[in-house]
Image (cartoon, rainbow, N blue to C red; front, side, top):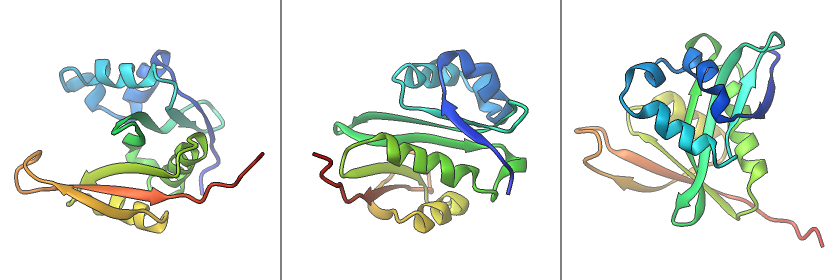
Length: 148
């Protein structure tokens, strides 16, 4: 497993995020959209000991006023080393809701495996976003402890 640290990501991190997510530089409007999500303060960046980005996760509370992981990206060379799992766990720890939602295409087997291993379950299906590849919505229920 690669040693890494996780810290809060900000709009200033967009150039670093583009090193693991080439679509930030090539897909129209993506960088602005991700920047807006980063401004919410619910996103994190995983870095190695040298400060090199390994992956990032952006979250919001725009999904029916519930916490939602909008996007998880891990550098192709860093996959299956615990980075994605750690970033998802960071999102879980940062929210005080009793559930956390996310979604992925039905065809995205690596993400579906990560979610299954982390205890997420299918909560719904959205058709017609990507032709022939439904979007699966997942939820993870959390037991909340009374800290009072």
